[in-house]
Length: 411
Length: 73
Image (cartoon, rainbow over all chains, first blue to last red; front, side):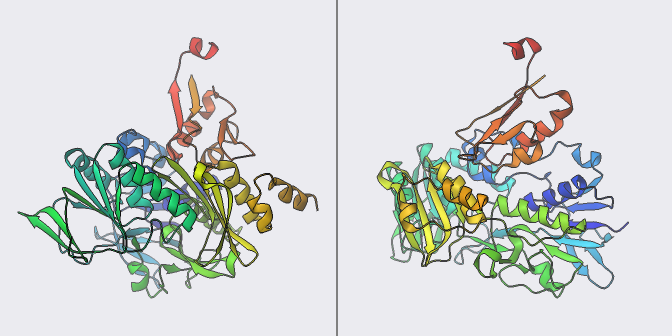
C-alpha cells in the first residue's frame, strides 16, 4: 500500500487529499497531522474565533465521517521523524513506517520566538494553532493591559479584537510603520489611524530586550529605549519560519522554505511541497523564488499538485490573494510586491474606501484594496491576464477597469 | 430541508463555496462576493453545502435545518 503520503493536515494537506479524490485518484492517501484535532481553518483564529463569535464547530473543515467516506487515512497527533528517499518510506514517531509513491510536504510554518524569551513565561503567548487560540481567548478575558509585539496582519487582528473588548492595547513594532512588510504606505497609514481611533497605542522602531516576571508570570516588558511597559498579557507575533527541517534532513534543497519548481516538485520527483512551507518560482515576476502564507496559495497549490499526480501537470501561476480584518477595515490584496513599487491611489483614502495600485515601472504588480471589493475583483482579473492599466487609468475612479479586460478578451 | 444564507458583509470572495458546489453558489462578477443560487438546495447536495460552510475562510455561510413551511414562507 504505497500511494500518497501527505505530511501536514492544514489547509494545503487537506485540500490535496480532497482534490485527489475528486479527480478520481484510486490509490491510498495518508494524511498526517501533528495536532490532536481534525483539520481546521486558521484564519478565524485571530478574527471571529478570538472574538468568541465563532464556535469551535465552525472551524473544522470536514464532517468527522468524511475521511472514512473518502478512504482517506487521517493520522492525527502523529509526526514524521525521517524520510528514507531510497526506500520511499517515512518513519513515524509512533515507530511505524509508511511507504509512498508520492510524498508531499504540507508542513506549514511555526511562529518565530522572541530572542530574549527563554522557556515559557505565563502570560506570554503566541498564536498559530487552535490550542493557542483557546489559550489566548481565555487569557484575554482576564487581562487588562495587553502588549502585542509585531504589527503584522496577525498581531493587528488580535489588537482589533482586544481593543473592541475594551482592553488597553499597546503594539511594539521594530519597523517604522504597521504592516511594513505586506502593505504600501497609504494603506499602512489608514490602518494605523483606525487602530489608534480604537484606542490602540503604537511604539515604532522599538524592540523588546527583556521580559520581566514575578513567580513565572509576566509583569512588564523592557524596551530598547529603557522604558518598562507593564503587561498582563503579551502576544508575540513577529512572523514565522517554514517547517522545512524534515526536508532538509532528507537532503532536499531548503532556502526560506522547501524549494520546488513551477509544478511544486522538489529535486526528487517523488517529493513535492505545497502551501506555507514551499518556496516556489513566481511566474508573474520572472520566476523569482517566493514563499506565501495564505489560504488561496495553500488551496491552489494543492489543486495544481493533485492535477499533476493525476497526469495533468501544469505550471502554478495563480494570482496571490490575501485578506485581513483591521480595526473595522476590510483589507484585500491581489498580487505581490517586493518593495520599491510606485503607489497609485484610486479613490479617496480619507473616505477609508480606496485602493492602491502598485507598479514596478509601468507593470502592475499588486493592488491593495481597503473596503473596496469591486477594485479587488478587477485587480485579480487584470493581474491574471497580465494587463497593466496606465497609472492615469488606475487613478481615475471614473475609468471602468473592466473595459481593459473585455477588450483583451475580444481581441 | 436545508436553508443556505451568506452574510455578504463577511464574504472575502475566496470562492471556496463555488468550488464546493457551483449549483448552489456563485460569485458576483463585479466584486466577487458570493451569492446563493439555491437557498433551499436539494437533499443530494446537503453534504457539499455543509462542506462549503465549513470551508468558508470568512465563516460567512450559514446552513440551517428548516421546516418545509418555513421554506415556503
